[in-house]
Image 1 (cartoon, rainbow, N blue to C red):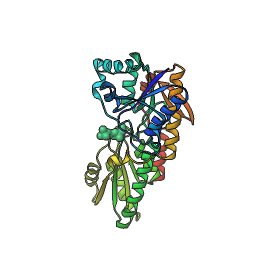
Image 2 (cartoon, rainbow, N blue to C red):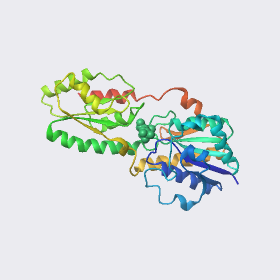
Image 3 (tube, helix red, strand yellow):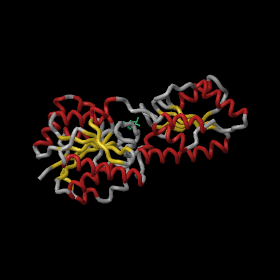
Image 4 (cartoon, rainbow, N blue to C red):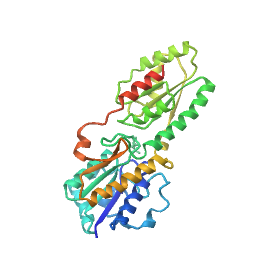
Length: 319
Ligand code: F6P
């Protein structure tokens, strides 16, 4: 009987559980034995692996976080550390692995694949910054969490006629900031992919105030600067009282949206399908609503790009 393993790695994202469930159920449906690796690559090295049954993934589709736990494991870059991980799989007769995570997790997956474990990646990260897929699992949920927070902040911003700066996640990727900014009607969106001219932001706020605009929302991705720094920078050019909100890890939690659950279910099952057809060294994705696969090499070929059209639109709509 074919045996595969599944793990979740890196920053958790809502919908990872639905993806694990899909891998396990699709695997069992196809007559495969599925093993869960707990605590990501760390668990692979520490031999924290357990066979999963249908019931083990019951009642998790609606839960945020990951039942398999997650970890960042920088030492996985060491060949000797990976050797241990591979030995732990091989002694159980497991030759295939599904890695659910972001681009850091894909690097480990690519190496394991080169070293003899047939590996497929499933994009699980709130950042939406992985090539080869239009959306990553968890992005939609995190986006809606931010939009809900921005709507609430807007109520108080309007009442007190204030400028609010909302810091969202995204060290290198501005998708969350951009999409939340458009959906939340933010006046300014600052993302790592584009140069941020704070003087120009201050001038726009001033022009708006002269026109009678009394409040304003700025969304800043954490990779650009902190909300506090943004407030300080603004005050170099304009005399305003700002309030800052850092949404932090609340963006990573919560029950996944319906879209994330469906996406996770499709991608998890497709990963198993690929392994059963002896296709590996690829990441699965969804492009134009069709399931696709992209080799890890191609995923890493270029860095993820922001949707320039959406960024332009955000500026046009926030005049
Ligand atoms: O990659 C997901 C993410 O949530 C990023 O948006 C964020 O910069 C990072 O993880 C935070 O990581 P940690 O939880 O390890 O501090």
